[in-house]
Length: 543
Image (cartoon, rainbow, N blue to C red):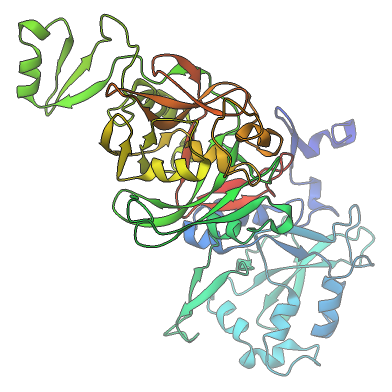
């Protein structure tokens, strides 16, 4: 409709993939159509170039607010009356061709009533000039002697037949009005904004020599989610407390409290990398320095495909002496020597006989580790890469999946030392990095109250995790997929735990392909910027 003949000169048409944006040009002779909401050029400048030049901390403090675009035909009214006209839904003091009674945005201009109320005891006077000496806004506006007038957002209608739109402005004699388009005289612009409700005054006393200092009290995503625990608002989030255990690598000196999403379909959907991921929960997490903070753990909702846990080629960093030793006659066929300025890298080739009982050594790293933290990580959008924290993953496990429960494997995953029957003691490693896999305990605790069921019971489908398939949100892709814990063998080898298509925990040798769902922890300062966690309206994240 805007592109009909009579409007062609008034619009610039921009076609995009999913929407159509229109930029209105200055109307001929500026008659009867120019207003703040179109937007006016000063609106575009303030919410474009000016806003972009603000420092990020200041931008974060500015809230979206509704500005009212009413006005009156004359300035000869009381401040309190002008206040009402500015906010009216309709009336004579509106636009000739359109009637936008408000505008929602970040930066606007002050109202005429703002100026009037800034004076002392002039509420009952139509002559604001008499209060200039008692009006702090007049003091700052009059500082600029070259342009002593200042625009307001309040509209005025001219009395002629065209009812051209003017805007009120403030000058040394009080309030005036002039056409907003094509005006020959420049006027000052004082940006006006509303601060978010979580902005705090952190210093100062409000004087010119000691102005107030502001900071924003941003609610972290972890704190926001924790308020939903114990299934508040049907969130599906529940608190689980693990008692202190001196044999564990985390939680050895105090109880550990976790917040896990449980049940059939909790509100834990989140947009990450423009894909659907799910929130496993909020966990006390070590960043590798001993600093433990609550962090959100995500898992991709779908698999990224089938991969071997380790294909037999593993990259190591060696000293020059180690490399020279590897390059002796009996090693030349097994190593590729790469000399760089400060280090020497060796790529070991797959063993000649193939790998049937190789060890799960995620930390070495395995080929799957290298892929997730190399090519896959590099494929993520930069905005989301910046959200991922390097944290400590615990690489424990056990010798069986048929004799232990979710509660048991949680401890074995985090043990300092695991004593394995017919195997002896194994000192458990940790790995510091960004992308990994789910723990077996993550799957078990995602069900509704099945943590006392065995991971697998070959004799009974009602005594293991399968009984909870219908109440476990992680039982959704129904494919054999890799988990992080290792399963120890009697011959000093180890495979890796897997999640079966049937819903129980099993294991596999590491050179077989299984499906992969990446897992990660977010930075502790991430914010939830939108959504409610449902599949139709997933959470959105911001830094």
